[in-house]
Length: 472
Image 1 (cartoon, one colour):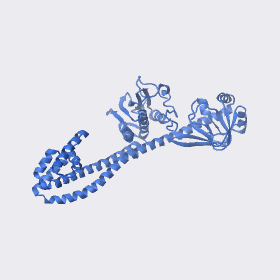
Image 2 (cartoon, one colour):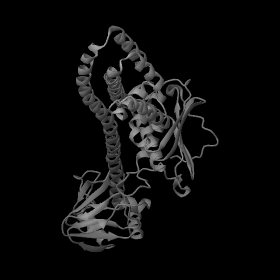
Image 3 (cartoon, helix red, strand yellow):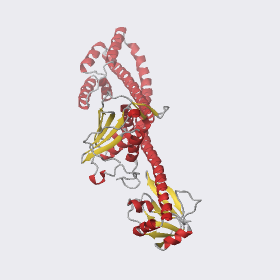
């Protein structure tokens, strides 16, 4: 027996007979606790079998070290990279003093070729390990994406929540002062009160938004008028008056109808009244923004809905953009070129949103948070075509053919699992019978996603001959 039948397929142990056979071809090395056997991303290393001690296998995911397994006597590692030539997808470190058998690439391949029972054990383990590690990392990728979106959402929610809190606090103080001023207005004659009521009503309906320079100029003009009429704190009062369209001409009209000794009281009352309306508007806008974000998240995740349903592609993309608002506002302009005549399609909505998330997030990274992201939709024969075009650095030609490979990433170790685009590819091609590929050059990258309008009668999206075949 070359392996223990009681061990699972994922981590089979080589039998004593197999260990003795392999020791004839390898070199035995000794390790102290803490010694690194190999590191994630390393290339050109040997096939290794544990003879004594314990070796932990870990991978960097989302900035954290994830323990995959602990190898002991008879466990082996390195067969995947040895046969595929790929870089290591994990790291190995001795937990205790240990002895490990190392076999170089050529010798390992010769053993595999000459000893079919041993090859069965190793190759079966390689397949099962690849499936297991990929499944774990796919879940980690989803959780990492959720973590980033949650952090961004918390930031987006904090702004309107804080604004609403500030406005509510100011409103409380404002109401107390306004009540006192209102009582003092009783000293005015009835015709003066009628004029004031009409003046306040007309001004309240004239909220005006000026550009910053014009606003500043008008505030200076009103401030000067107030100072000429001996109104205290004129610089505090003028912004509110300008906001509701009160200029010097209207103030002159006010002064003609209100006794001079009551003018400061009336202007302070007007400012407080208008400020109260502004504060109420700010609170309303803040709560509306919070509701919008909550609804966007609900729609993004398709809560309370079946996994397969009628999906509005534009709504899904827009909800994803709302979730990314904290990143986009730093310097990215989003240009939407939507074909509003497109029909809804039957799809897995939350999975498609995961695709939009990965593509938008990659575009943001490629542009270093500054540039233009153009999202275009149109009908292409029997499919809906969605394009995401960014003005980033582009994808080097040397790696374009590997973009959709599992575990392939250009990010630093631990910064990405290399599964974002692989997941997007599988969701589009396997789950929705569509297609995804891209064109890239310095300064512009365009990802194209094709989704069949009717999957039940779908025979394949007819893609444009200009599209490059960079897909799995």
